Amino acid sequence: MRKNLLYLLLLVFAACGQESLEPADLGLDYMPVEASRFWTYSVDETVYFGEGDTESSSFYYRDIIADSYIGKEGELVYQVTREKSFDQIAWQDHSVYTLQIKQQALLKSKNNLLTVPLVFPPKEDKSWDGNVYNTQNEDLYSIISLGAYEIGGNTYQSTVKVLQEMEDDEITVRDHRYEIYAKGVGMVEQYLETLTYCSRNDCLGEQIIENGRLSHLKLINNGQY
Image (tube, rainbow, N blue to C red; front, side, top):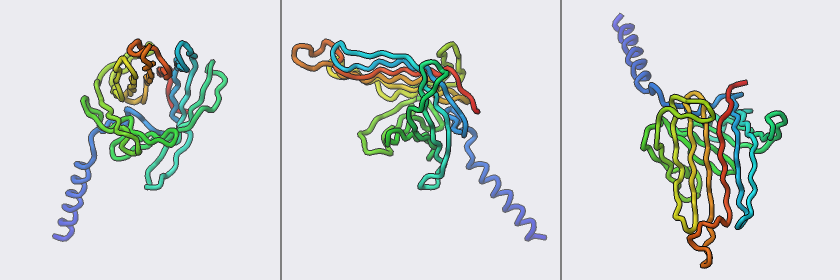
C-alpha cells in the first residue's frame, strides 16, 4: 500500500515539474508555422541602377507553406514557396525559403543564408544577433515596439516591430530595414531600403543614389488552405 502511495506521489510531483517547465505563452503565434498557411502581400519596389537610372514596379507575393521535413538535427523545417503575380490571378513561382523554430527563435533560410528574424517570447528592447547562425558580421536586431498597429486598412491589436537596421550617414550609405509581426497572423509588413550614395569628390554628401533597392511589403490576405 505504501509503495502504491509513494508511486502516486512521484507521479504527481513529476507532473507538476513538467507543468512548471511548460511556458505559459512563448508568443510563437506571432509567426504561426503550419502546413498550408499562406500570406499575400502587395509589393512596391524600386531598384536603383545608377545616377538617375531607376526602375519602379508594383506586384504581389504569395507565400505558401507547401511542405515540411525533418532537418539534420531532428528539427521540423517548413518549406515556403513564394509566388509572384501582377494581377492576383496568374501566379508564377518566384523563390523558396524555409522557416523553423529552434531554441525559442524563428530561423529563416533564404538564398543559403540562415538568419533569425524573431525571438520568443517577444519583449520590448530585446536584442539579438540576426546573423548568429551564419558567417556574416554581427547584425543586431531589436524589438522596438509592441501593441496595436494599422496597415492596409486593417488594425492588428498585438504586434511586434523588429528593427533590423537604421543607418544613414547621409554621405555614403542608407540602410533601413524592419519587419512587423501580428499575433495569430505572422509577418504583416516588411520594409527594406539599402542605398549607396555617390561618394566621388564632385557629389560627396549630396545623397545622389548610386545603386540600391527599396522594397515595401504589406499584408493584404492570409489564411490556411
